[in-house]
Length: 251
Image (cartoon, rainbow, N blue to C red; front, side, top):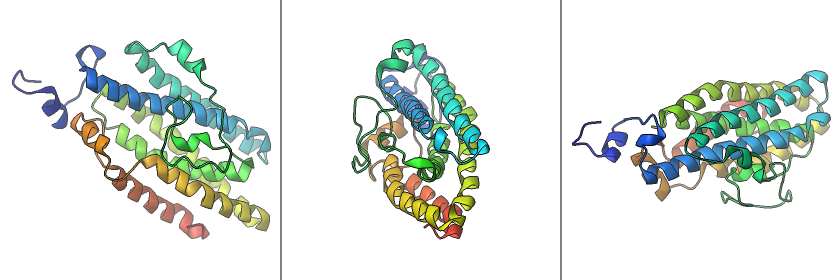
């Protein structure tokens, strides 16, 4: 960064920061907020999927659910270690919240945070059995792929690198769900369950993209922590739904 270029200009022009030592305070706060949202969401997702392992219909599907639980916890640990570089108490952080806690199924948070942690709102809702877990995994997995692609471009290089390494395993989780769909849809009863779950989860996953015209997005873009507005990411997700679920008559 040249001496005549302000740090926001440097970041807006595509510059990257590599160490907590050269991170300004406001940028630090926004970066840690993004990191905490990722870590909390992964820990909550891991805890949520752990509750449905024993509802899986086969050994293969139980192994798939176990893999998701394990790898999401590992992903959280990877980014939590980066938060530790900024002074976060990582040991206390992991046990400070009940990651398996959920609101009643009929709750409607929209995009709001709740309960004191930074998980995305969708991870406050409970899973109801295997078909419901598969649907949530697919819908949220398709959303996560888009959201992680955005975070993988972030201007804090260690965070962006970690996200780019995590993203392929998250996409593999989604493929496990897509693979499970045809068998669920082949049976009339479970097809009705899948259709009901799509109706339930679709608006809740959509809410994770945030509000259109977000004022906070403008700040994150100036810092190079975001590139595309919420509504653009949401449109990409809707296109993914049409491609992946349209052939099954689910969209």
